[in-house]
Image (cartoon, rainbow, N blue to C red; front, side, top):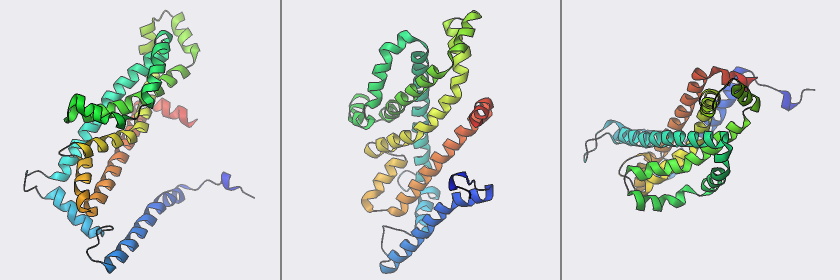
Length: 273
C-alpha cells in the first residue's frame, strides 16, 4: 500500500494541479460577480472582467487629459524605479555588512547585536521620521525600502558566511592569502548566489514598503493609484492593479532565479543534490 507521502505527481499532473487553484478562484469570482451585478448593475465591489478591461484600457492606452501621460505605464515605471533603487542599495549595504561581520570576529562582536536590534524595529514606524528628515520626495520612499530590507539581507549573509567550512579559510591562509584576499576570492564568490536568494526572499517586504510609502505621500506609482481611487470604490482599477503588482513581483522573482541559475550553475546543482 502506497503512502500519500511517497506519491509524486507526474509533470502533466503537477502542471494541472498548479493551475487548478487559479482556475477555481477565477470561476468563483465570475460566479460571485455575475450574481452581484444581476442584483445591482451598478455594484462596484465585484466588477466584471469587461469593466476592469475598460478601466485599464483607459489608463494604459489613453493619455491623461490633465498631464498627457499614460497613467498605467507611468505608475509602473515610477514604482519599479523606486523598488529597483531601494533593493540594489539594500543588497549592496546588506551584503557588505553581512560579509564583514560574518568573516571578521572583531567586527561581529560590536555590530551583530546592533544589527539584530535594528532588524526588529518595524520600518513602517519610521516612515514619519523619514518624511520629516528626507521630505516627501523620492529619497524617503527609497530609504524606507533600504531600512526595511538591508538588515534582513545583512543577517542572512552573515549567517551564510559563518556556515562556510572553516577548512577553506585555513587552506587559503596556508597558501598565504591575506584577510582581504580570503574575503574577495574565497567568501564573496560563494556568497553571491546566496545574496540573490536573500533578495528574492526580501522582495515581498520591499513591495510592501513601496506601496505604503506611495500611498501616504506620492503623485504617481502603483500604490498611489490604488489608494487614490479607493475613495471612489473603483474596484475595476484596484483589482487589476493588484493583479499587475503580483505579476510584476512574480516576473522579478523568476528573473532573479534565472540569473542565479545562469551565473552560478554550481550553486543550483549543489542544492539539488
